[in-house]
Image 1 (cartoon, helix red, strand yellow):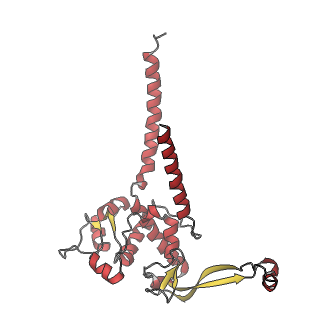
Image 2 (cartoon, rainbow, N blue to C red; image 1 turned 45 degrees about the vertical axis):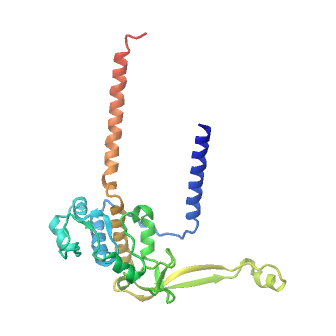
Image 3 (tube, one colour; image 1 turned 90 degrees about the horizontal axis):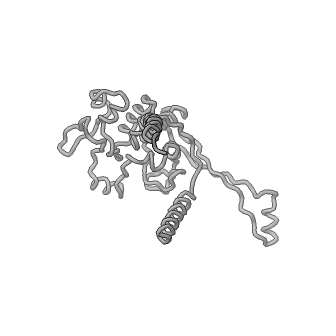
Amino acid sequence: MKKLLAGIVLSTAALFSQVLLASGDTVPLDKANIDVHNQESVIRGAKYFVNYCMGCHSVAFSRYNRLAADTGLTDKQVQENLIFTSGKDGEMSKVGDNMVNAMRPDDVEEGFGAAPPDLSLTGRLRGGDWIYSYLKAFYVDPTRPMGVNNTVFPNVGMPHVLWELQGWQKLEKNCTPAAGGEQGKAAADGAHAEAPHCTEHLVNMKPGKISGPEYNQIVRDITAFLVYVSEPAQLHRKTIGIFVLLFMVLFGVVAYFLKKEYWKDVH
């Protein structure tokens, strides 16, 4: 038993150490302030996703009719406004189908080198703040195959599909000398010179079709859709949880008085 407990403790410690190491290289993220109960935002996000993202990515764990049921859309509205893909037989996808793009995996790997990932669980894996910050963090980088890079996900292979809306950004680095002005003196004396403090920030070099705040709202809507898709049950689980707790409290009161009635003659 002691060996079992020790094994569990060591396994848990190893797991937490891996999580901490994995989260070491982090960048500051912007707050997305996502509200998955905002149906209009989720619907707009679904519209932008199928128009800009679904050419490569899928959310195969979700169905069109589930999105319709959760957001108040009719099947006809979904069919006319959100479905642009076709199946292997060439027929348009139906509202009961999974939200899968029409690209063949072999063609995708041949064109991009690797198949773009399915984004069904990205909202749970990365979180809304990460997705929101990532979609705003593309910048021009001629050294990359797609001509762009990303400060949140360095050396990502994805092109900037929203460039027409956001425009183009460039990465600028600002460095300040070491505190106290001792860097030059230390170098002259042969001592170890303190490295200057450098910061990086993105600067707009070519505006897009819309303003910055408008672009941020579009990205926020896409993020809301992806966070919703990653766990549709979150729309209802809190309400269900409240009813479960109320039931447990009521059951506890009934069980207490029932126990008291059964044991009243036992001394």
